[in-house]
Length: 387
Length: 220
Image 1: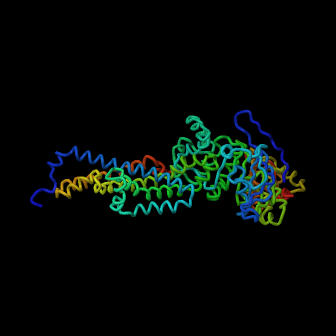
Image 2: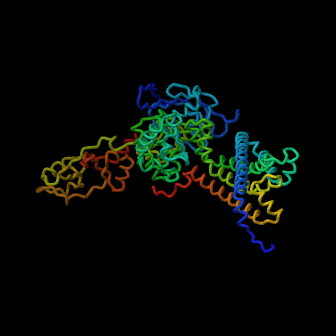
Image 3: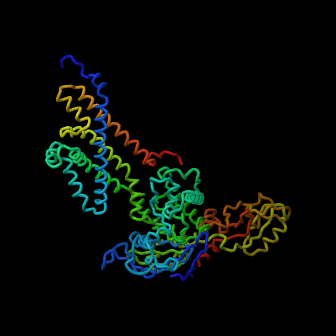
């Protein structure tokens, strides 16, 4: 279990921050005595405020059951669940649910209500007036990237799966819930749309900082989205609860190791970015500069026989082997073998490694946002990130 | 027939008031029957939805009522309730129950499970969920049931002429009794017109109540 500081959020006004969610020895049995499939056994974990925690595992592992116990769609047999220190079992379930965002796989938009009305469902339950509801749903539609003027009066049947999913997220955010429960929300959309929705969720989360409990059976989705990942095992047992990096780096059991897959090293690489590593300095020469000077410097460098040729703005043009650097004259572009492994700061290490393998090189050039060379990254450096 | 035209327009022209009164009587009988039938059916449907085991006996009983021939039902009822509108209404109402209960229950059952689940998850009360999510979504089937009930009832009203009620049915009966086809034809045609108008009325009502069912094909 990861230690976490439980932040007690008593927000005076405005946007409420996320709230911590704590499971304390939570057990759910469907039939007394035997433990049926989907049951949850003695689940304890602490999800800090503002984190995305992904519940992942094979079907029948109790991940959805655990999620639904938070808003009491399912009642635990024993144990406690605390949101921001308050026991959900002590609260009125209807009021509790109105304060918790909820998104399900089939989205569950109401077919008979317009998109605007759908987004404002909970505000309406809470008695907001029509003007305020409309302002709020417009604001949320814009937040999830749907133009309110175009979408608010449409019906769900007129939207694509991805658009409906975004409306579902907007609806769940309607009353600024500190906690959002998402039950395989992207399970029914195609992989390309899913990836985009995942990115949007992460972007959104940067703005709204809710505590999100997210259920999926897809380990890649879990790793991508989760600040924390809870791996469940058939029979409702929490097999491991940790950061994605720790789960990939040190699976707690044979089950977890098998579940995360044989390529877990590569998956770990996808968690880090090029900007997480300090690029090494390379010997560089600028087009038009003295070749003799560059030659002296590259011959003096024991690390690599390759000179990195830059244009006047400092952007990489390619590599020049020390033998091809003339003793006189100036450096020019024709001398260089163009470099294909150009790494941007936001690229994952997995993609960086892939770019180097594709280009058949062991050294990639790291550039900054303006395209200027910042240094180089080698395959060994990338590999060392796993240590 | 002895050289007389099939339709005596002069008679019609001279009895517009009577014809109108019978038409109104016909409509009132049918309206009351459908309204009362719907009220009873709605309650029965709620019971069937609340306690599922009751659905089979309720539909069995409604089905039994439905298959009793109307003439036999009058024969049973007249000794009790006499030759009154009440007798006519009891018979008419009993024929609406089966279709209305069935369509209401089927309509509610057909509400997408995910709409229900998300309603629960967002904090609807069970009652709020029923009135604001399930019932609107069941509307197409409920209105379809009302449509059939209304059209059949308008037709059946004529039969209650047998016990001295029947609106336009009386006109049909009198025409048959006195070999005056004008009355029979007038009654029959108007009864059909009422049924068709009721049918159209319910189609329009459904369009009003369910705008979302037609909102398709807008490109995203």
